[in-house]
Length: 214
Image (cartoon, rainbow, N blue to C red; front, side):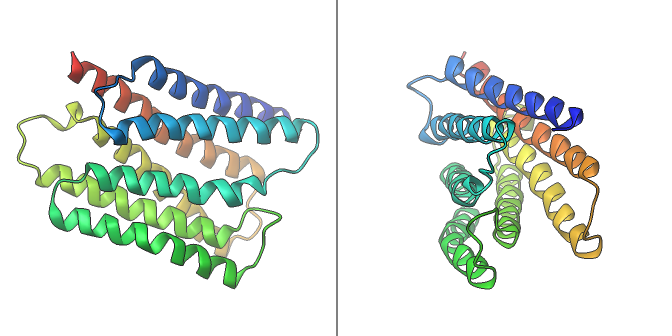
């Protein structure tokens, strides 16, 4: 495995574990369900990514795990943003996105029935659904007439992180259409930036919520 991939893998695993541990340390029984689900999601992500990394180090291809975990991750994100939405129209939109998730999975695997590796068509659907959900939730935050500043609303940080993450990966999927063989170094750089945005947003969400409790 090239050195830059090893460095990225350790950085990514450390970022995930830090996010999960911060969530576990700060979580309280009084937290709404959506925040507890976010902690569970970071734990599941850490587990899956650690297993994949260890298998890659042993030269075992286990990227097929993403085919099963990616829709679960997308479902978690859509449900969390749906639960936290306040404006009725935004809540209905997120409910529609949740209902469309299994349909998009069926369409993607009908178009490309691949199970031994990650289905990129399905991944594009997940990124697009998360992008719409994040934009809708940020719109919901702006429509909310609460006096609380944006920076003090915990899920604002989560939605902002997901917005950057899904935007970058949607752009990457579009670039692959015109540049089929993008160098691995650039793919790694994209992944580092996208994941840093998303999980830093999760960490900021946990810290912001804890400060709000105080």
